[in-house]
Image 1 (cartoon, helix red, strand yellow):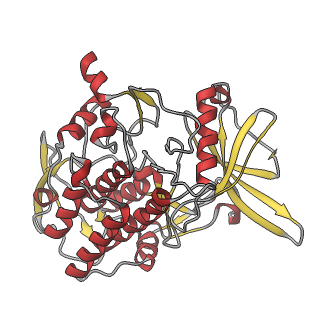
Image 2 (cartoon, one colour):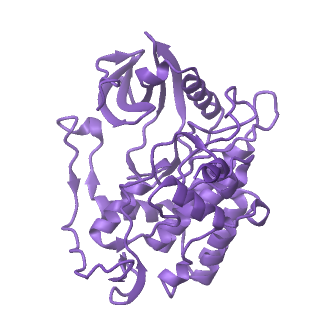
Image 3 (tube, rainbow, N blue to C red):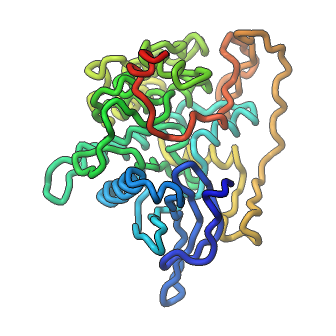
Length: 390
């Protein structure tokens, strides 16, 4: 916790702050509750623009744009915004609290338990996230004109799965639309390098197909358990994205579904014209794969996966102490004992919860450290300018 971002205590507007949930370079997230007559009580997540960013006009504009845009959205797969305000110089927005974990945390837990995300669960999660994004892409403003909203930051850390099996896309902090007041300066791109589309890396204009590309990256990583575009720096990751350099899933997993691999290839096409034209088209492709492979999709699957990975997790406000959240899990499966030569390692294929064997081996890059996500979202030079300066 930095000196420039002191911990808030007490109340913020009509909300009582309960505990700090997360702290980032731009904003901090708190768990808060709101009381009303008749013993009404509601818990929300409060996103607070930190003091340093609150003095930056661009950061304030992005923050208010997020509140304005998300306030126009209403979909079960998007985290909603309840209120936006500023009190005593503190800018904040009250959002729906999702009791669960983001996909980065889920993959990290699966890696620790030496299990793989089942294909039907992965497809369910991506299909539901795509449904929420499609709603955002198609949304119109109060004047009836399309918003042409693009999230631009779809990634593992911005898709939440609730312990009840629900899926929510969060953080529209760098989204763009025709209703945005703040416009990104030319030559500056925002997002996480491993999930940005080629046109986003190059600083070109983007549309909803940039989000389709990012969904393809998420689908790849959920189904293979590996980074799609790894690298030691933003430049290396962006270079891999622009060149379309990723290991085909069937190389990592020989029995990988050809139909599912084709969906991933289409979503990751370098030319936006060759990708799915909408998030709905991608959902339809995923449903076709599920029908072909005999997989069932549904929130009951994600609910069961969350229970098997994390056990019973009490809601933060139901625990005796704010910082004591107990994960009641079975003992973790011991990690396989293998040598780790460079640059690849022969590893035992992670077990899928109730599918296949766990004795087959294949060559694959070293397992990703899913907690080591890309740098926080920030402005950076486009790949074209990055390359020229290298």
